[in-house]
Image (cartoon, rainbow over the protein chains, first blue to last red):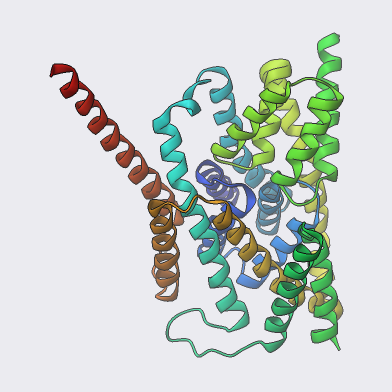
Length: 191
Length: 198
């Protein structure tokens, strides 16, 4: 039951301070999951991969996943309720009482100054994950070992992604990339 | 009775959108527009654009912000509750079912190999989400400094295994933005009053 409460509170906090949708949330989810030893880095990446390829909001998918992995259906409910509750309350306040709040220049300036921080957080999380998963670097003193196959998959995805968006002028759906990398994974690791 | 019907309508619409949109909140905005502006006419185009701005500038999942807003506009507090419930239910069900079978799945070496590939892909997706935000961002000195400071200090602290919650970056960014705005505002105000007194 304490786990449930902890899941609820953790995701309540994440729901209340994360801006920029699902990806803006990943830095915070990652930190808390690793800190509480709920997930390893690799499990976390698996979950994000599934959350990205199943329907629905990524943030809700992630909350349900982490919750369910720790405490079954109750955990899933606790974490999901936690992540949506701040949104729900804040939107009700904005729509019913504070209809003008987002139009004040001061509020706009404050929100605008959060945006670059979120972009920095997302990129830093990606680089940290890259170092940890592909080069096994988790701290300054860890000895790096390159996972050539993972780096190869990363390189192929980069080329395909940029090639496609140059050629078609629109970006490939993440699901296509996930499916492609699953095939590459089977080819490179499975055989 | 009419209200009940309307609530049911909201619930079904959100359930449908929650069950068939892949790729999270931003992909969902297009579907919400189609369903509620074009098809049902519950919102004017302009109000919908307002809604998107609100959903993006308030914390939390964008899809939840949108569903709460639309439900409230249509049927008040009950509408908001029903609407958000509809949006969340498909995710909750699908993901819970997957989580029941995931461990058994991962025992298969082929599936485990596929997920090795997917892990590399997720790192790529997070990277490109960050780069996309960077491209969309106005390249003002403040933004560039805020981004680099966050990026570098987060990387350093994580490599040095120092624990520092990312929440503080968000809070510090917001506070500094508010201070800069207030200082600018006060300066402008004092400039105005000194001109008037002349």
